[in-house]
Amino acid sequence: QRYHQQDKKWPDVAYHLFVDAQGRMWEGRSLATRGSSGTVYDLSDRALICLIGKFDQDQVPAAQWDALVAAVGHVCESHGIATTEITMHRQLAQTSCPGANLAARIADGSLKRAVDAWLARR
Image 1: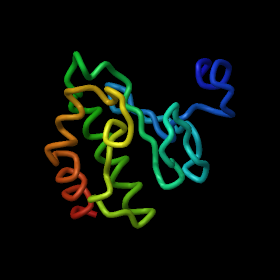
Image 2: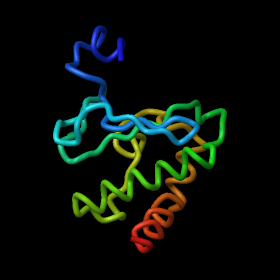
Image 3: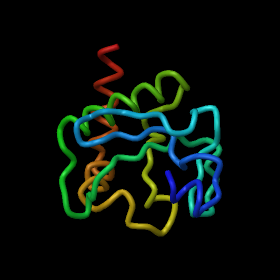
Image 4: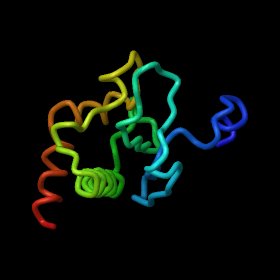
């Protein structure tokens, strides 16, 4: 928060939602407010979800993964977004974010399939 608000001079943290290793979620910016990034691509149609961790080194804990699936599912459901629109930071900018281990689970379709299953249970 300090980095985003004091160093970057943004009015709030960059992300809309944060998810920790235990699956707890916090709201950053309201989804009604455009997220911020140090990159140049348009964020006006994005919900920015930050998983707290070092996923170049660590795997995503099950509770955190389940919370991510629910968060993405909720955003898709409540805003009419197709799961085919799920992306990650490194697809849109030159960055290592979200880390190799999480990126692999998004790139191979695991997140999309899990969100599709979550939505089907609704």
